[in-house]
Amino acid sequence: MSTSKKWQLFGCLVLIVLGLDQATKLYVHTTFALYESRPVIDNLFAFTYVRNSGAAFGMLARQSETFLRLFFPVVTVLALAGLMIYFIRVPSQCILRLSGLCLIISGALGNGFDRLWLGQVIDFIDVHWYAYHWPAFNVADSSICIGVGLLLLDSFRAARE
Image (cartoon, rainbow, N blue to C red):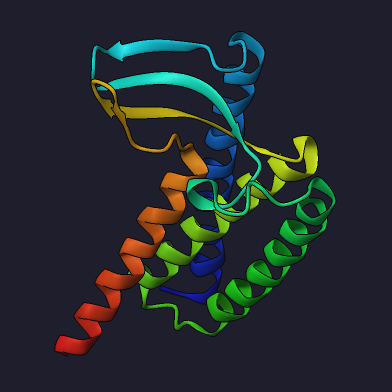
């Protein structure tokens, strides 16, 4: 893949994932009441509007709002800068690694926009087994997880070669 194709991949993936993330969050924010839940598959999957002021799984949620309003933008900018430097340095033929980085960057941007807009992240995907719930998440969170999975897969493939 050429360098221009590498940047086309970046632009396409980031725009698609970021657009899907923000569109779904906007839909939930404008059509659901906070904490409203709508079952999709009974006792397994629902759309439930919640907000997370902390990090993954609610970590840091008990910190002061002032701390969180400063902490998350700084961490997000530093993480994005590091990810972009890494992306630039990855050879164009490493498509799996590049795709993983694009997905992580997309997710970080999506949740970062929420924090700037609301000071919290909108979560709405509620996977559960009857009363046992996995923490709610969103498209950006899914994108980050899939991106990390692609990076791990790429590292396992590189280790075998």
